[in-house]
Image (tube, rainbow, N blue to C red; front, side):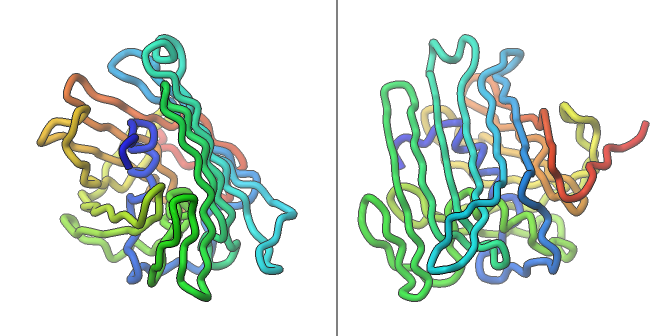
Length: 260
């Protein structure tokens, strides 16, 4: 993945916050429903850099006769950052509403002069992923990054101990990738919609042009039935980037900010 930029990094980080590969146990009740829409703002220091929106929709489209839910995510730079590094990204995932496993994934990324699109089909009878760059065999639960995020929201995390490391697998662009995440405990965290009781995680990141060797990525997810990420903070070579929940509607369960 040569073009792995900040918005995609944070979205993938949100996904991985508590996925456990094949050992994950899904809760009985699904944490989301069609009609849910979540919006995030990204800030670089004091400057607004970008915004991202993720929504869940019913769809008449079927896969091998099976019904599906459509997850649609978009991310774009705003303000001055359009001049520095204009980004317009769209992601689509069609998932089984019961197992939450993906049938099909598509993306269209426009990041400055870079362009990339992909169409990905998951064949679970043959255990083969077919994408624009070829065919990729797999075993166990492998997701695209959108379906992985929504599956992760339904993982039973009641047994987690501080310091425990988890792993997820997802397909993106050129193969199946893994991400390791460490559980750091519980905290109260403030976002654009109030202060919430949260679970805190630390996904690993790879040092490079935008990250220092010891850069850290922290994620906070609501400690309730919604299990939605409300904030992320990642350290860069210069400064830091914060992703903050700014809007949420159509949730299956009401948000419960801490009352002061």
